[in-house]
Length: 495
Image (cartoon, rainbow, N blue to C red):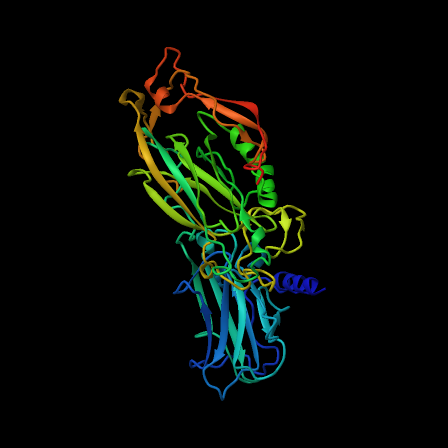
């Protein structure tokens, strides 16, 4: 019943009111013109980042106060809006995401307004000296028109004296800095490096009762990470990314910590000219060894110059850690080394508030998104928190081990300029002449369930051998084959 009421009130706050700018004149006012606020009443925002900026999908505290303890206020209203409402009389608030306001249940001083969109107001006529309201910033990336969000307050001492304007209005600009867990370089569509590289990726778990005490699992002996799994891949390949639906492989990984299906998806996408190149696979870690790093090696080339990885968290409804489309090709050559923090993502397939909360299938399935940091459910480990408040759940480190230059005769300049994600022209690209086919030895058996039983083996020509070879038909020397295999189950691989 409580959840229903909250949803109903939030729905009312977003769907009632009139188009255009909110008239904050208090209904009890006997005077139409606001008085001059000489700094007595003030609206402030705890942005944590410092300055008048906000980050998408974060929770901020709005504080409405009087600076004179002999002059409380009785009525108030706080509205969040797009500044464009000033110039458009018929402004449709439903078409613009400015986030949402949330009242604080512990204070019972505010309620959702039925007069205006995205507004809260007083619940009674008592004297007030301080009111706190939460604002959850817009979720989706915004274009230039929507970068600004305005928070506007009204306070009234009585029916004849009320205030708006100076000290009661705050305009915030969207923070253009990258999220804390972003790779160091933006993704580019074409890599112009005439070489290949070998890398090591290292996953270092940091989730513990000391670093993340709120709602930490009651049975830590059951805690663990899945195997590290991922791939080096091309620009057009997507293993996972925010806003997309989880693949069947990601669903199984996030819900069951089982990498078998997502490994199959990666292997099936292997291609010389697109898709994936190397399957990334590192050891899983369980309590009490969750701080032990998980390693894997992989190769990249000018086609497959990005990598993406995933690690499931258990216990959790469907949460995972990872990086997507991590760019390794830079103007200065192959990236030497980088380390980024990791925070939980929600696969969108199972409902659940906390690590151990009862779960149910999400209907309909949601898109991949951050776990509800800033949640207003007190059972959440992230209750009323910002991403900046969280310590990383893991660190992901990538290190370049070697670079293999390609023969000069295999690098041919092509005319024209390519464009990156930002629409800017990239340097002239190089094309690699294809090489002839050379087979290699079969690799180790990789079980579908990550431990033992049925699996697959892969083989292909070595990169070094292919780079030295050319053949008359001009075919590429690197070929990959897979075949079924079986790994015996024993005490060493059953866990």
